[in-house]
Length: 515
Image 1 (cartoon, helix red, strand yellow):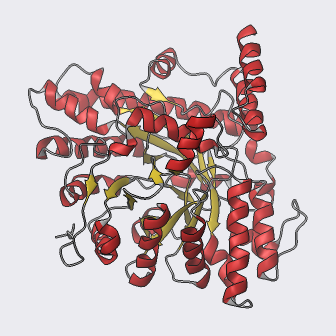
Image 2 (cartoon, rainbow, N blue to C red; image 1 turned 30 degrees about the vertical axis):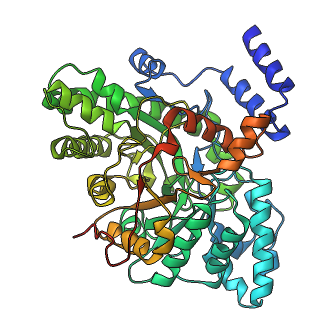
Image 3 (cartoon, rainbow, N blue to C red; image 1 turned 90 degrees about the horizontal axis):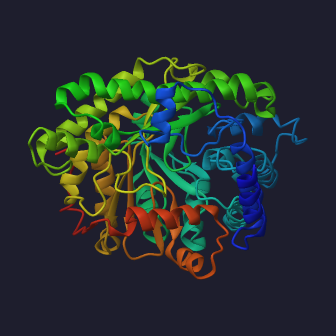
């Protein structure tokens, strides 16, 4: 154990970590001293050599990666565990939620889901005037950032308009915080253009929110779903036991035949290996750690095992498609060449088919199988593109970009994201951005996310970091938000700041993706 003692000593002595970051790092180190769940030699080799990746979830799963408590039920019934009665006014409701957030686990150590905050609080807001509502929501939003300093903490708004939702958007523009991450659920029949426009103006200021296709999500997950962490969608009252990802770029490199044999034999074999690792981790969580037998969230009906599944992640699609095209003597690139792009769609469709007929334990929340997920990458990735995106710096013009990636979105009920990088022309034509969002969703995009080139915020994968915080981290080595450290690695390794910048001329000339 000398190596572990040395690493622990380094963590204890380093001045770069806050107290809570140090405690969390030491806990992770202790977990690594335990044996990982047993898998076959082939699966262990795939994990060790980068074909599959457990995203550093730890050797001994003792909490689900992502969980989504039913906050609505908690507010209605109170909590025996917290010793809190059901709230009767906005003051009590905010205090109740803040107390509850502090007791909700996840893989990050912080809650990744804060609930549909507008829907949860709107019934309590009718008794206060606008000034009081703004003051209370500002206190809540500042407290979330200071007490949950992690950009994977995620809140949801919409699809309906509300005073609370509008107040939150205004506060986002005022406070300019990276925490919490934020999604607006958009429904063509329920979400007014004025609310989408308000949210677009908020993105101009602080990079938030995401825009998610509410009808598409409810068709896949039902009406009770939440967007968590980066942009991962799961069932409220449930969640995901684990997220294990398959590196499609590495998968393709390990194949020496033609495209047809890859689709028929190599990809299924690699999907099976990834699923084996998932099954081992799920079984360890449920049967060994027995999380669902001793969680107050389960005891109080806020979580239920039968609403859980797991997330089967894929990434590196662009490199996989390009490599297979090259093996066949072609030169086309995913996102630019019709055949290479269509091959990418075919790989995703085949992966979705395989995952949908691979049973996994304790995944009743998705009929006994995992959700396919377009995984957005991590800070240590080199030379491999996040999820099913087009490589950074190679994105084509806006219309071609959206048409290339949109056909993939139907397969990813638990989340897929493509990031569009706009210049300041967007701020002069916000209605054009609304039109892009509406058009993209009409053509089947599940999640529409954009950056503004000129503000202080960078969208890394699905979470945000401020350029000024990265500069401070570089100068001092200290970051209050632990996610800033991950962001610095992604900026260095994945060239996040090199996304192709797109212009928006006017709402009349904005591309209609569906057309």
